[in-house]
Image (cartoon, rainbow, N blue to C red; front, side, top):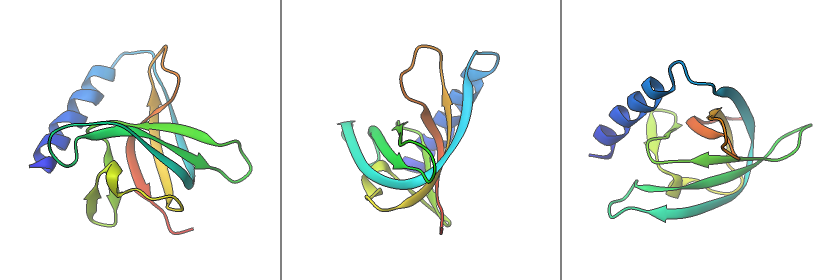
Length: 111
């Protein structure tokens, strides 16, 4: 059920961004904190942010919203499954006026 919600949600996000003034950045690093701001009534409907410690750069806070693809191998996860110490790569976008970039895809790495 969660999978059926995530796929259309991500499609809507990307379609809504077409032609918008947004920027994209890829962040890689180790998760030093996971903050969950709010949750829905079903598992997988939580959103919040992660703080990434990056090698040779300052830490980056990345928002993780409902519909973000979080992938470890062939498994799709939710923000509740993220742990401090995990190594990840976040493909992000930032809409005008937003403080933090939003993760569109979050993948685990094996550095």
